[in-house]
Image (cartoon, rainbow, N blue to C red):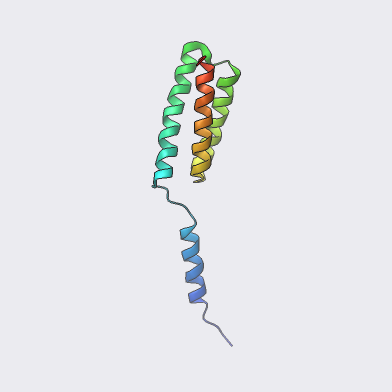
Length: 95
């Protein structure tokens, strides 16, 4: 006896779409703008001669990881890494 699986398939599709995140939402925007600002601060710190410090290297690593989190739409993790990176950038500058 054949069954109609259309309702089940539609429900599965709806759940999949709901779980993909909101690429244009406020967390995505916060992550993106934070990445831009922190990357600029990191470049500036390097230009000021702080590029070889341990704190600068930690910040660079965190920003790389944050970019990966952004690509996979894990925005809260991205935001956390950006915030931590900015602390290391400030430390690298002696602040």
